[in-house]
Amino acid sequence: MAINWTEAQIEQIVASVMKNLGHGAPDADCQWNSTSYCGRNLIGIYEDMNDAIVAAEAGYKAIRSMSVEDREKIITVIRRLCREEAPIMAKLGVAETKMGRVDHKTAKHMLVADKTPGTSDITASVKTGDFGLTLTEMAPFGVVGSITPSTNPSETVICNSIGMIAAGNGVVFNPHPNAIATSNYAVDLVNRACAEAGGPRVLVASVAKPTLDTANIMYKHPSIRLLVCTGGPGVVKSVLSSGKKAIGAGAGNPPVIVDDTADIRKAGKDIIDGCSFDNNLPCIAEKEVFAFDSIADELIDAMKGAGAYLITKEQADKLAEIVLVDKKNPKTGVISKIVNRDCVGRDAAVLLEKIGVRVCSNIRCIICETEFEHPFVQHELMMPILPIVRVRDIDQAIDLAVKAEHGCRHTAHMHSKNVDRLTRFARAVETTIFVKNAPSYAGIGFGGEGHTTFTIAGPTGEGLTSARSFTRYRRCVLSESFRII
Image (cartoon, rainbow, N blue to C red):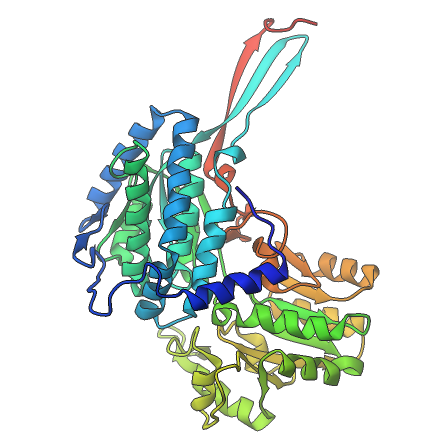
């Protein structure tokens, strides 16, 4: 089922999506909300979180009686519906959240459908010896409680559902409040697929109005055996302090190093492709660049040729005042900068217009030269703004890049042909994902090898989660038997 895309194929996918964007899309007057879509009630959506958990538990009990082959049949239908309805979810996501790009969100759904591991990820191991046989199997937890983000809402729901169902679990979601309709559409899609494949009518569930209260019910409910959170540091911290087994996928601030051995033209295009993908919403996307001074001018020219617009330092400072706002801590009174939610995931042209600059539609990213201390470097913006810091050598580049990553250990990138330098940076930054000489999205299998996921669990160590991440190991021992040697 997995597909290894080349860069040319990726471009073809995006171009095809743009050309055929109307396929499967709703009429302009189609009404939607968190419980219905175009007059059709969504399956598995409940007003009360307790009812949603009860439904997911019933789904878990039903799937327990099904074979692994039956689980894979459900997943096969999920993949098909995800491909068919990718444009709908992409349009719905942009309309509801006001973030990202429809063509790129459509491509992300295709990625989820094609490269999220299914039941093949669930394997058993056997050990035999003088004292008999020991079988170790990957078993389901039961009902998994999942917190999903607004940045990749339906993608995360479907990706998590495939992995969690492959593992044999039922699932209840508490989506981000700013992406309820999109997330619940994906929940409905999974349940429609399940029913079509002969499974229970409700295998995954959600709530019509997710809040902190519904999340707390999920955290404390005795039927929830595993919590999985994809979101910001605050919600990850709350999940990890729940007292239950938890998988946390937190924030990052991925740096990029470009040295004097790199293919500069390719590096410039790769960085802009990755940084601008879905307007920088993926947590793996390039957030700040550290470029050797000797090649910085050439790199900036390559970026401009790839669709970037260079602003001055004065314009960068002006833009920073708009995209970052002050927030006062009610307990300490300390004022700090936070990202302006109205700017997250917006088109580069929209952000530039806020400082009086109008550009053509082919501008995908805003670039600027800054000092290391600039807020664009220090904050994860999640918008197509890319600061560039000049460095004298690899020692300074690694030092500053590691500091800018802030110990999140999420993702880092480097463009170089020097293996020793690549190795040094990888060892120093200690990130879950390290991408060499490619756009950031190669790190989740988009034009790179390996499976995809939108739940990258750095804080809790699971890394790029898949079906096996949502299992618990069980051992069965048979003493002094089944040994034929």
